[in-house]
Image 1: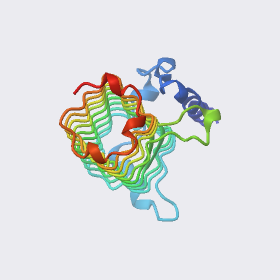
Image 2: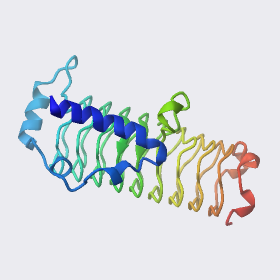
Image 3: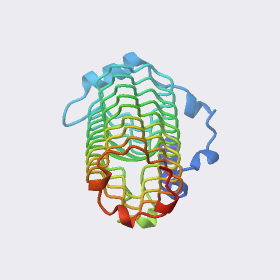
Length: 263
């Protein structure tokens, strides 16, 4: 009973604190056993997956799975709501349509993982590695500060702010200082996303929405901006050299601080 109350309280705290750049980590002891240990082995995780069905997917809600090596596992459709997966190895894992809402994945290794259509709402993913990962069609309102998504795909994904739930704060992706070089963001919703000081060198932003996005200090060298919507995006100190298709971008004249661009 105490554990369920604790999980519920942690989930409420996550949602409540997201409005302030999802910085609730200062209120949590990240060195506590709850955040660094595992209560299951890989074999036990595999057994739970084997027993799962389409109607009753594997449910790891609130489980402590930090530090485990779950690389290459098929975890599609599994539920990891409020689970702790800090520094967990998930390289090459399949997490398509998985539920990772309010999960902790600090410094987790998701290199080459597939998260197509996954839900990552209020997830804590600072410094996570997602190089080459596929998050196409996913819902990502997570804190990915300092994360690496080199060559990853967020094509058609929704990272934008949920304007229907302002009572819960501005729920959106945080990608401050993230490495997004060669990112495939074709058709992605990045409206009001925090991309300050992120590196988007060579990223494909074709058809993406950057409406109201915070891009201060970001590096957009060599990006493809065909049909990219810049309405209200903050371009202060943004490096925008050698862009492709910028003449076909939408609402570039409505972006903020265009006079402070670095070309």
